[in-house]
Image (cartoon, rainbow, N blue to C red; front, side, top):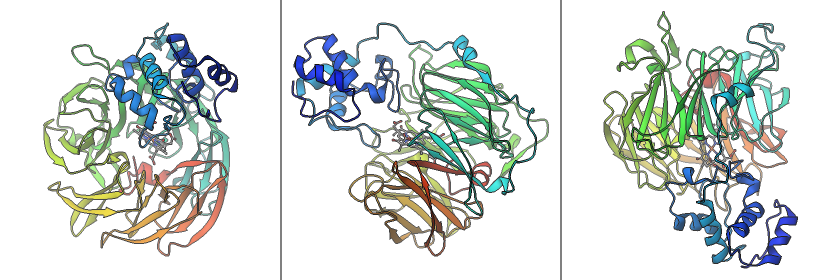
Length: 522
Ligand code: DHE
């Protein structure tokens, strides 16, 4: 075995031992190699960290040959680096083979574990009902800083930092707000959900939903939180008030095959949570109880909840919708009638009618469309959606009436995140991968042309935009330990201010999120 160099984040002692032992001839050596090369991101016990859990039950879609290729070449659109120059073929094969061996102790996270993890610091309703600051509470931004695991609360009018606080390790996915914007829920990759009171700047409650979590969703009425896990294979429902456990849904096919959950989202007009699964060709819909009075959800979805709920699944019961492929990534039309999904390894996307459960269209979306960051707008009287691709230097624009491809815009590299606002003439897309990762494109939503390409800080990754509630100014991240968010004027594209941050990943404006603004993620 050849180890040309070892990565700076590795435990030096173990790496030194490995240099001495040579090729890993047995499981013990492969295990040591795992500790040296992989544990920092995937966890010492393979339970996940900033990378996913690596246990046989989570690798069912990956052949050992494909696992070797991922170790050798890295994985597109993730933080998985290539080890091809560090490890020789024998070491890679040995390591890949070892990952498919069951762990000595099968990891478990039972309802009792969930209950025991719950901490209620300030029971819901025990803190004052007015904000402790003067800023517009509906124009606040949460900025997640993954560099040192903190979050900042910004005033969306003055961009003054109201507060900065420590978060759980490795938050991932967008924080979710209650409809009044008072509380925000964070989810971490290692399974923790934190409910935070923005008015009082205090944690209300925390609970650990799983060992390796994908994301969380909050019902449109703010009463329920659903967590989607990779490990264990489960969805977990909580009462949002103090994060009391309500129900654990083991995720498996009717034949008993378990599955990771790709993600879960709230579908307000349907009054339900919708989850796509990674290892079973099914989408799950789980309705929450409808309020006695019709609730107009928000923003452009001015439809009473009842009228859209066309199926008769009882509250909190699972409706299984068979689909033709695994769905790793997905998105919805504004009415939440259609789910637009894609498999990471697939050659395109598909549209599922959530009422009939039928596939109604195939989409020409090669190159790993990042549907989770899709946005929509009105173009010449028709609604279009635009999505970047994780493995292709392009943005695809699709007509949402007949699902035809309107345009493919060539970009300077594959992108991760896309953003706009109903009041802005522009859509922004980053160039997250490749040599031009310090650039962002600005697209004119009327002409569907790139009208500007900015390089906010040469050499540093520029990514992820979020507008203020008015659609006038926006925040863009400089994705670096010594990074920043830069405030731009949405019309003139002029940089107005630089606010230092530690690797700011996402920014989340209260108004845009609670109103399900068309130009942002939900
Ligand atoms: Fe994410 C959101 C999946 C890698 C940063 N990412 C999401 C969501 C999903 C997802 C399903 C939507 C959840 C939500 O908001 O409720 N992400 C995946 C992957 O499958 C992938 C490719 C591999 C993985 O490691 O899980 C992946 N994601 C990354 C990263 O490497 C990023 C860039 C850095 C990080 O923090 O891990 C990253 N993902 C983000 C961010 C969001 C996100 C900042 C929220 C975007 C938003 O604006 O809503």
